[in-house]
Length: 231
Image (tube, rainbow, N blue to C red):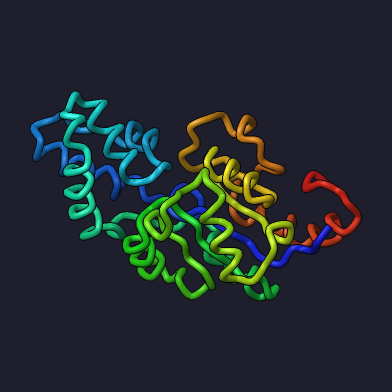
């Protein structure tokens, strides 16, 4: 097998905790519509499949008019993009881990279902933009995760074949997209998973982002001998 030549990261629930800013934007929209407010736990359960799905789930949960979802998505984006990085924070150890991976000479990418604009705003606000050679947002291509196209687009920009890459995410769509693209997958046990982590089908689970480093340090030798990520 090929040695590891690139790592791709999901954003929300993997690199950053953005739930509070998403909740505030959702609740701004719901307030405008005269609908009840959602708590943080409810919003976390709705994150992960792109803005349209988040708004659709929020409107459905509060009894809103589902026929107007397209209009409501546009209004949500107005509220969210104005404050996308106000409360959003990187998870513990993320910046140091990214710096360590770059020091190893590995190119890094972000593949997220969040629109490209707020993705860049968040990465720049948190000082993380400098670590990434490719960034694919949820509106960069016609397809989003779990479709493999966004991962393959990032790998094309990096000039790395799928078998030499690793995807890090927190949810089923990250693992499904990685599998469909022919990429190995590691899932974090924090974030906004819609399924029990053990059921995501990842090659490995990690509890914190720094736990990724020993996997990366040893993975080339493991792949060269045909071992799995459990080695």
